[in-house]
Length: 82
Image (cartoon, rainbow, N blue to C red; front, side, top):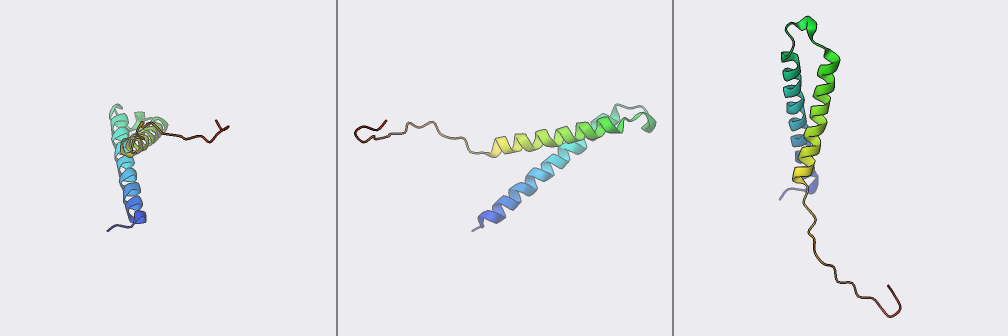
């Protein structure tokens, strides 16, 4: 059986790999819009790649978090409490 720390480390590794892949894809797409290497705006490439990495992390965290169930909670009050 896996220890919780090993599971967390594997999840973090997967998130980082996904973010790096998204950043690389975004960088390639941004560089590909330039006709020559001299026309590449490296600040825009870095910004786009960074944003893609952040979006990838957020989407993966959101997709893998368990949703809270909407269950009614029964609360019993003692006399005089509310």
